[in-house]
Amino acid sequence: MMKYFQRIGRSLMLPVACLPAAGILYGIGYWIDPSGWGANSIVSAFCIKAASAIIDKIPLLFAVGVSVGMAEDKDGTSAFAGLVSYLMITTLLSAGAIAMYTGLDVANVPAAFGKIENAFIGILAGIIGSTCYNKCREVMLPDWLSFFSGKNSVAIVTAFMSAITAAILYYVWPAVYGALESFGVSIADLGPWGAGIYAMLNRALIPLGLHHALNAVFWFDTVGINDLGKFWAGTGTPGVTGIYMTGFFPVMMFGLVAGAKAMYRTAKPNRRSMAASLLVAGAFASFFTGITEPLEFSFMFLAPGLYLIHALLTGISAVVCAYLPVRCGFNFSAGMIDWILSFRAPMAVNPWLIIPIGLVFAVVYYFVFKWMILKFDLKTPGREDEDFDELPIAPTTLPPKKDGKKDFTQMAATILEGLGGSENLKSYDYCATRIRVEVADGSQVDEHKIKSAGIPGVTRLSATNVQVVIGTKVQFAYEALKKLVEASK
Image 1 (cartoon, rainbow, N blue to C red):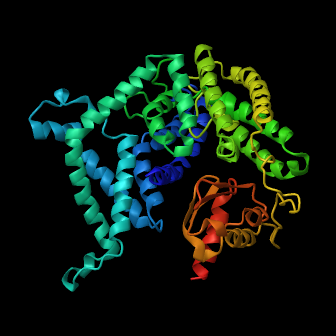
Image 2 (tube, rainbow, N blue to C red):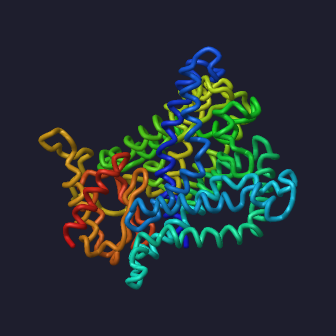
Image 3 (cartoon, rainbow, N blue to C red):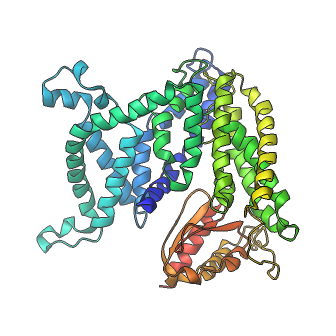
């Protein structure tokens, strides 16, 4: 079950990957004209309206993205199924439709159905679409129904399953919505401390892949909080909107970078260069883009106690930022790029304060991480018990091909050999920075061989689940690996 939730979390990376486009458009629009609606610049209004086309349709993007991501072969038919499911559910459970079924005036329809077009429903539709695709794509029907065999049956089955789901949600959704709303309101009522609790849970749930469900409540318009949408649209409350995003900036831009330095300084001298290949790349990604996975996964399972401290410090950062007159927002993550783009957003308040706050958290992270690592002999990168002394240090870069590009085929071949060959692979996919593999026999996995490909690190979630940390160019390594596996069949 946990693996299933992790797959859902990974599949969300596809729609999330389009959010930077919205962030750039919003940033340009508000830099030109903070009012944003054409009073001073039609270009500003054009950019902001283009960005809102993405933000306003996040639930729909989730439906399509999750459906593709959860499909066993990533076929576009699954995306179509996710779209069908989303349109079916949201239409059948719209406020107007409920009013027609019950004979009520639209104004008297329960509020839950007025919020049916939300991220939660989008994810559910994606799951339905991908499940129907995976189950039906190879179904053979009698000759007289042969046109509807295989992939042609997917949309039909999805429509029926979505109609059944909508019938169930007719009775269940008000209770689910009420529970989500109560949770969100109870956290919101705590003010800055609620923001801290949310931020801490956000980090703590990443290993389980459940943080996206939490984000849907606070960042998007599932129960009306919609912190991200209101921040960029300028429809929130000044000094309040942005409270669930601001606290991540000091951590991602400064805290984790300092934590990476502490891990480097405490690495064993003969392993520092190997640790640096992972930590430097991770720190760079965290600071500029807010992508923290390379750093967090480098110590998440090696030193879980340290990761919990990181989650706690993230919560403290959110509390501090919430109490201070500072508000920033992001469309993708809390890196420098989104920070700069949010300077002239309508709900931004003193975004420059992120620098002094971040520097303080950098000091805290560095000394807390260093003390924890040395005090409890935590096995952070470069401090593992395995004896690497006789092994060559993995290069940090791939040898270029004749055209100057990295040879991902060579990298993939080495990784595949280290994973025990194509016959040992049961399943494999990728997310923002890692190739995720399920192997048949974990004893055949040679981590040293994999690392010799020049990749930053390897993480084992279990005996048969392996994550190969590649970095932001993971797609190219994955596609090269996929070609090698398919060629060996």
